[in-house]
Length: 188
Image (cartoon, rainbow, N blue to C red; front, side):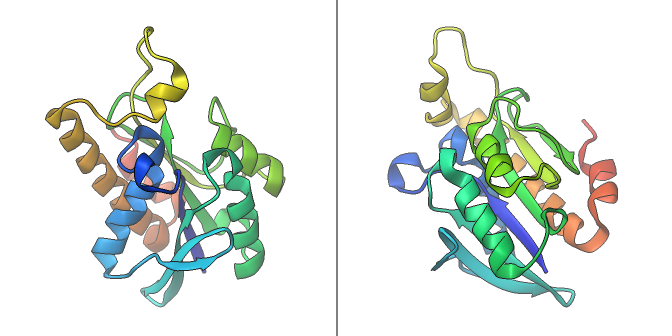
């Protein structure tokens, strides 16, 4: 059993914003695998499928970003899996726009959603893909920056391609594990 969890904020108001990068990756996986993430459980929306015989749950937390740990902790309990069987997708302001970083575990950095996950699960051992959304310009407030959309068609295309690569990395994680996935997807 593997859980693929994309962090974001629920509701139309937050669609296609930087903070919803995780939701965008899950949406790519929904389309790729022909499933819907629409079952309400574990403080989130869930869709299930099988890939090469492996049971997979795609999850979009519905708790708002700063309370993401509620959904992640509930999903771990419900599916009876540990952090190593869960890949989490999130935005990252410390990475250039459109760059991915795959890691087997790590801290929260400046991300409040990650901070809540680590607090409520008691673990930092989650494989993760951070999706670069670019640094906040000096004239922007951080909250306004992560809750804003991408300004140009070029930026939107770059991010769309990035979400697709992150979905490919998720499939690699399921089929080949975290080490092989890092070797392939952390190349610049």
